[in-house]
Amino acid sequence: MLTIKNLKVNYGYVNALKGVDIDIKKGKIVSILGSNGAGKTSLLKAISGLVEDKEGQIIFDEKDITNLSTEKVVSLGISHCPEGRRIFPELTVEENLKIGAYVLRKSKINLNDEFNRVYSFFPKLKERSKQVAGTLSGGEQQMLAIGRALMSKPKLLMLDEPSLGLAPIIVSEIFKIIKDINKEGTTVLLIEQNANQALKISDYSYVLELGQVVTSGISQDLLNDESIKKSYLGA
Picture 1 (tube, rainbow, N blue to C red):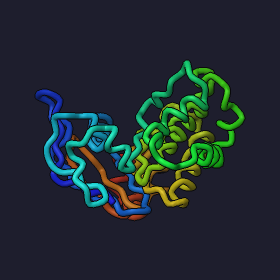
Picture 2: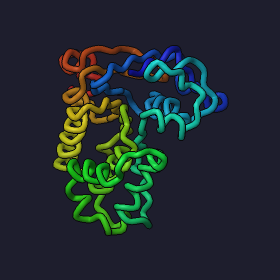
Picture 3: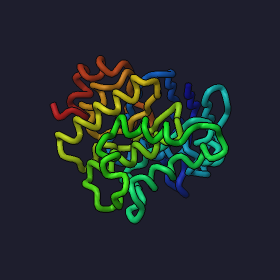
């Protein structure tokens, strides 16, 4: 579904990505692990068209999307749920979700069907549909951010640190929902500092260090890898 070839991202004199190669197969969950500053968020921003100074090639569904605008990337079927949620706090839950569906405005897709689909994953959002988003709990705001990303009917859902700052019981709920979203047919690219959880729910994983892929493999194999345990799993 997504192939990244020799991707380089620069912020002035800083080389955030230094020739990254990644393949993501349709219907899978792929996780990207790495410490702060490894280049994980830059990778998602490059795919989404949010950084201009980049080299290499990004192929999605056999189309070169390397230099496409963000709106075009979303319309092709990629949705990005950013780190920090970035909801619109002054708008209601329903209004936030409606904004996520803006690329469907010219399609024949029934918007109510998309609301119902999101509410099937996040019943709490339906209960709070008229509530101002800024008054939601942290976990509910994360659910809203993921739900908003789903409203564009993505083929590929990219999640940047969905468990950040959440209580363990909410983290478990979020990861279960991510798995359910994938089972319904959505491919997921997951960036997550909770490496243990990410490896448990993903099919394949890449490890980034200082802008480069240093290892990759089947997630279950990496979960049992002693060097990965030592570096990322607290062993």
